[in-house]
Length: 441
Image (tube, rainbow, N blue to C red; front, side):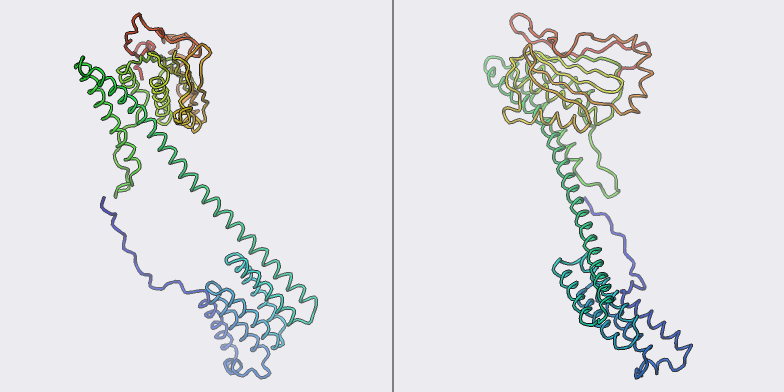
């Protein structure tokens, strides 16, 4: 796939200067403004003998400029500069100057605590408290500056913890998304491949046993293997296509449509070819379903029927699909020998079906029936908008729809005992009669 053309980036005429440059520009502007007010301003700045005001201004300007230049790359050095400037400003005789630089040092301590290691932050806070203790004779001032340092450290530590917590949540969300995607792919591969491989294995066994005596049956088994293999390859191409990156135009690559309940006919046919008759019973008003529910319902039926073929030892099973106003009910029952469930042999079929239903906020159950056999049932809730849109049509068309009334929970499927001699029964789909003028889904 050709790489997307890169958009040429234009070099800005003026890159954003560092913070220290802006601070230096500020102090130069202050000097220029003062020079308009006093012509000998530069002379006063260079001659500090007895010039208390300009001396404190010069110390503050130099200290803040160097702190701004160093704080993001060398924050500990910026802290040393701010503390040194505060000590030097004490000698100027202006009481506000050292306080301002001590406050600047507290800001640097907060930044160090939020962005650097815990050892560096503690070392910076201790250094600041020691400098305040040595340079200040007034106990009240020392206590106030120490408290400010402690508050700055607490604020920085809070920011650090919040950032760490946010990063942990982001990593957890990323891992959860990756895990969910892996589970989705695993479910899709299992549901797609397990059924097909089971059919292929049974057909291959049948063909090998009757190869010498019934060539026609062998040819039929080979044809079924070929058709099932092609269907599986098509599904794998669709799944792999969904995992590919988008094309250069930003659209998605073309994909084959995902299977749904409309494909139950093919499932019934392939299952009948391996000796298991599947009767599909439709109840309620059939209508288009959301793609995720349609796919999940098909996969549940497919996996349940595959388990019947592999584990039940019966020739018949019944699939009931009940379209209700707020949910789709799916049920697969058989009259097998009631052997161990598929999960007992290390399979993931029931686990995958349960996960599919859970993702749709539905209900799922699977287990042996009291009268023998196995039952898989799922309730897939429909979106509120989809349910409300069909309420009127469902009410008006209920009288014209012929609904099968036998319960699907414990009632044996029709023809479960099979005819005499154990001959195979053809699989079929039973649909309700549609009202006049209605197109069946």
